[in-house]
Image (cartoon, rainbow, N blue to C red; front, side, top):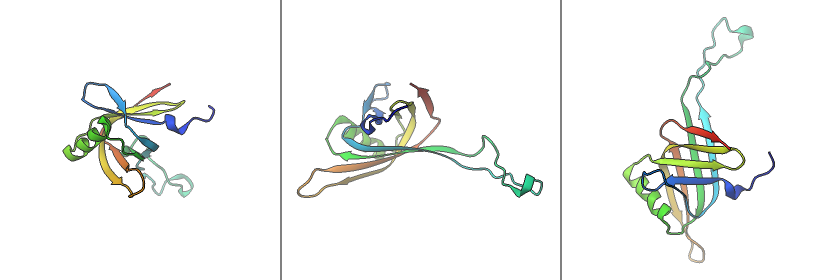
Length: 137
């Protein structure tokens, strides 16, 4: 796979719960992280004293972070509403040249900033709130 444009990594949110996803407006930078907890099953019989991990065990999670320019769009209003209502709606993360990750996420952080001589900016952080799916391109 060749190099991909960073602007093609998109975070999309289901605005109304009807399966119609819209790209979160104004984002300039995005990041998706996957994590899995380890379950250590090392014992005195572990070969050579090496640590052993239990395959398929442990909690899996994903986090999304993004930052950009406040644009006063429908997605900005929806992100605020998701945060204040504690909702966990469906999101999609489109990874260029790879596929799409989809599932419920909770907005865990929402920050706004600005200077007197610059644009208003925001940062958003999301944490997975259920099972995620992956669809390859």
